[in-house]
Amino acid sequence: MIRAKLAHLTYALAASAASLTAHAESGWSQLNMTQGVTHISREIYHLHMKIFWICVAIGAVVFSVMLWSIVNYRKSKGAVADVTLVHNTKVEIVWTIVPVIILVAMAVPAAKTLIEIEDTTKTELTVKVTGFQWGWEYDYLDDGVVYFSRLDHHSDAARELLSGIDPASVEHYLLNVDHPFVVPVGTKVRLLVTGADVIHSWWVPAFGVKKDAIPGFVNEAWFNIDADKPGLYRGQCAELCGRDHGFMPIVVDARSKEDFAAWLKQKAAEQKQATAPTAPAAASAPTAATEEKAPWPKS
Ligand SMILES: [Cu+2]
Image: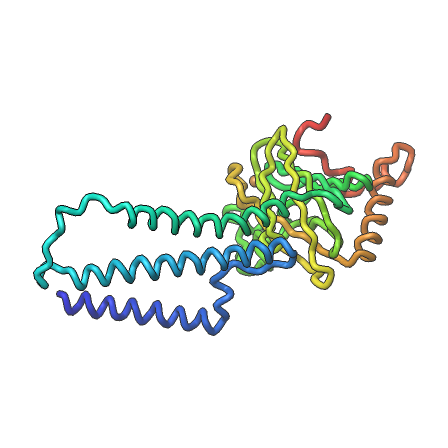
């Protein structure tokens, strides 16, 4: 029985060692937090690593002393508990001061990063982000561009019960959206995050941004993507918000400043034309912008 259990344990250990080796081959970085593509996300990463290693050092010291004591002062060696020791001022001072020093050493860099995260001054572009059941609305406040971003229709069709579509055949299943959030790189973008119905949370790990979208509140967040890192960045709603919480992904399309300016200009022109009451084109061929109504009553 014991032998069988040991064999089982050995097998389990070997299996986990093998999976760890596999991880090592694909890069240990996959087990860790990613560094992201903004200065803040890297700050957060380094803070995480610093505090991680402090915890490892504390664990190593505490468990070494504990194991050493257990081995050297075990009953079979004739150790007898000291029942006279009830108080030791020196030791108490040490075990108070040492943790205080460690906590302050961790709090100072953490507070510095937190202050930087909250600094929404000198932003170059402001976008209002509204979470709703189930998607996101992006409103480029100064440019008259507003649109909705929902789960793309390939994923949406495949996720239906008895759809007959194999989710594995859908590229980026449940991760793609119909209209990605387009932003410029190398620009400090401020988000005004709010909710239309219940609490959602706008989360893009690569930017180090996760901000609650709360109805009746406007929360601020910002990011500045490295100028040499345009591309697609993915995120999720990070606040359990109801039935389709898992079906409101975020896709950020980071473009060069020139490409973004061109996109914004074109989008603004399209939307202006679509909403113009006298434009015949709007009446005969409604665009996506006019077809799509806000899923909540707008004032
Ligand atoms: Cu949500």
